[in-house]
Amino acid sequence: MDGFALAQQVRSNPETRDIPIIFISATFITQEDKEFALSLGAVRFLEKPIEASELLLTVAEVLTGESPEQPEPLPESTFQRGYTARLLDKLRHKENQIRRAQRLVETVPAEQRPAFEALLAQTKVQRDQIEDELRLLNSRMAGDEQPSE
Image (cartoon, rainbow, N blue to C red; front, side):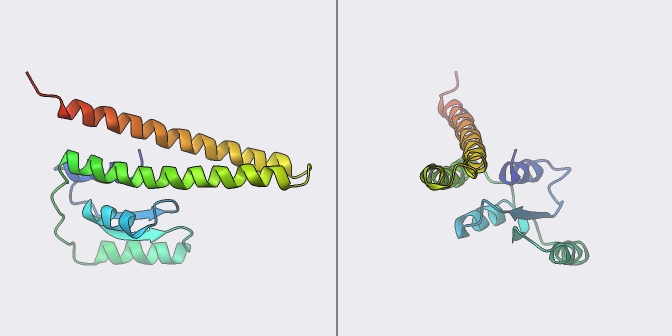
């Protein structure tokens, strides 16, 4: 479960919906990612890498500041569409990383090749995880769209 899914789950539970959420991400960093996170009720969005002092300052500000009114959780279909769009963007990024790494592996000296091959393998695992999450979301969305009897 990533931050988007966690935020939706936190906001959907009456017992946890008022907990402030600070997003910290190295991979979901586009403006659309930030807007989606804020629509889920995040109070801040920080990009990695982040200095520990900046993180601590942000946490202190959130905990000592006035708690903003939390938005209602997104309807599940709206969340799933937004989340799918975010994952598709991330998948395109991973595919580009894989293509670049494959070209690079062919050009690096033999002694450096194992490190680049390991990086390529890890990126492929990450791509596969995104594809699995997309399949799961699509099956959920298909289940939601079927008429009830």
